[in-house]
Each structure stands twice: as C-alpha cells, then as structure tokens.
Length: 421
Image (tube, rainbow, N blue to C red; front, side):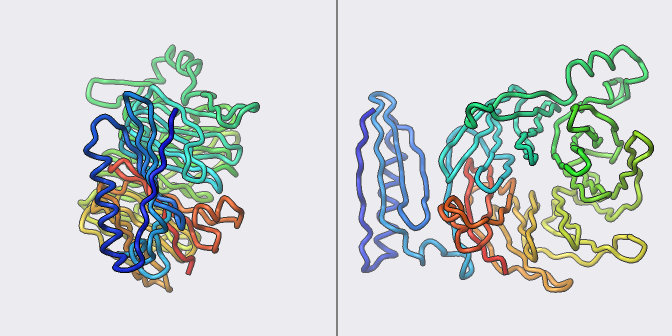
C-alpha cells in the first residue's frame, strides 16, 4: 500500500483564523472526494490527523496539521478541561462503551465491539445479536455484552494472542434453555397471550451491572424485568418483576440494587442470601414521576438518577439505612442519557449533545464545565483514573487528571481530560 504524507503548518500569527482555514480546507478535501473513504483522528499535543484511503488504488493519504493551539483546543470548556482525542468510524452509532486502564471497548448498532488502545484500534469482534446496548468488563477481563435481541454474550481473549477475542458463552446457556423448556412452570407471561421462559429476556437488554465480590451480574431489560446471573456457571438464578414499563438502567452496590424505568420510578432492592439461594426484595421506591428514568449511577455517598426531562435527582443514606432525597439539579435542555461518577465529580451526557461536569460540595452540585463537540446525542460515558504509566500520558491522563470517554450517536468517541478537583 502506498502512503503519501501531506503536512499543513499552522502559522503563529492570526492563528485562530489560519487554524480554522486549514481545518475547513482539509474537511472539504476529504468529504467531497467520493473515491476515498476517510477517518479523522485527533492526537493531543501532536497533530490533527486525517487519513483517507482510495477505494480504487488502495492508496492512503495522511494529512497532518501542527500542534493545535490551546485556545482552539479548549474553546467552550473551562480552564483545565480539554478534548485530547477522538475516534470516528463511519460504521455505526455508538451505544455503549467500557474502559479499563489501557483498553477502551465500544459497541455500536452495526453489531461490532471494537477494542482500542491509545486511540488506535487494537482488536474487534462481532456478535449476531444486534445492537450492542451495554458492555461491562470483569476483573478477569471477561467481556459481557447486552444486545437488542435480549441476549447477553460473554467474550474472552485468547491465551496465545490478546488481540483475539472468542465467545465464551451466552446467557442463558443453550443447555439451560433446553432443560427449562421441558417444564410448563418455567414459562411466564411476558405480554398478552405470549409466554416465555423466565430465564430469558424477551426484549432488549438495556443495561448491565457487575458485583464481582458476590459473583453476580445484573441485567435490565425492556421486558420490565431485572435478571440475576451467577458468573462462574452463567446461570440465571432469579428474575425480578421490577417495573410496570421498560427497565432502562440498573446499578448495584454492596447489598443494594437500584433500578430505573420508563414508568418514572427508581426502586431499591435488597439482596439477601437465604441458604444457597440469593433473593431480592423491594425495600424502597425513591421516585415517582411522569418523566422516564434513563440513567443511574452510584458512588460512595449518593445515588444519582437522570431522566428524560433533563433533571438529575440524588439521594443519600439516612437513618436506619433509608435513602433520603437530597436534591435535584438541571442544566440539560433534553433527556439525560448517561451518568458517570468519580470522587466529587459527576458527569451527565444528554440528548442535547453536551456533557456537564458537576462538582459536589456538601449537598450542593455546581456545573463547573460543559464539554461540547459532539454533533449527536451523548449516549454513554466512562471515567478512568490514570495510574500514571506511559499509556496514560498518551491518553492525556499523565498529569493526574481524569480521563473521560464519551460515546455518541454521531458515530464518534471523544476523550476528555478533566481535573480531579
């Protein structure tokens, strides 16, 4: 394959004007040449790089600009917050992502799960179960993915080649489905005049949550249930009839499980060990409202919920382990689609294409920054606290700042660097 390098220098004088002119010219060059497929990369502190590959000659052209001026890089953000990287693939909208210290996993509506390392594609694998709506990673580096068709897939890396991922199982396993299908008592009504096995989701899996200390995986579904899975043998051990409408989100912490639904409620379930069985009972309903609950996150001091009216509610643990409503805050004009938390910071992504960064002081939450740049709804977020290695430095986290990943329906993943305090 032939490689051509084209360098575009940004002049120091009138840099804002010249930088805009270079970007516009490069975008025009890329977007209006139908014979080429293109990819856009942003690399912090080095170059803005465009690559395009000829469909006819297999020729790749890489176009670089010199280091992006800080005023352009951070425009629209508060001091200290910056966009440090971007991944764009014209293959599907990003619906889910998960991050470890060195790897980023993205799921899209074209059935692919991509694995990225230092903003470069490291690996990838494909499921036949449709849109990838949820991804979680275990400490053993097993990858669990939830799909539009109601299935949960389990993936693991090859011991010989960490770039190769193979399917390690499905939830529920085929043998469990066959075994359960024999007994009529294992069928439950899921819709009017329609029954299904209780160990299977009958609609899309909307969210996954791991509790590794207990060896459990929770899956929320539009079929109005939350199912509890034992990780070591991939068996469904309980199905909770959680809500009167689609369950959009689930978050587990210690002995409590929180669920949010399109019926406008947030519920708290307590996990109890009864002999060899694990059972969950409803202990509290935190919220009842007309707007759908679209996101949940739990940190060490509070539970947060995002809803379709753009508001974020939060609760704190009170006396007798009863959660009390502590406040509500709002800045988004449209639905909050995802939440992430780290330390005193809360991140909310919304259908208005923005990410709000909230800092907590006591019970007061202040929006300290608004991250803009996505051209579609922000569907998923992940926060990583860098460990200080070389890989973290390349992702922009070598200075001790948090690294925030945002996935959007504009088919891109953006990487942000945000101060911890």
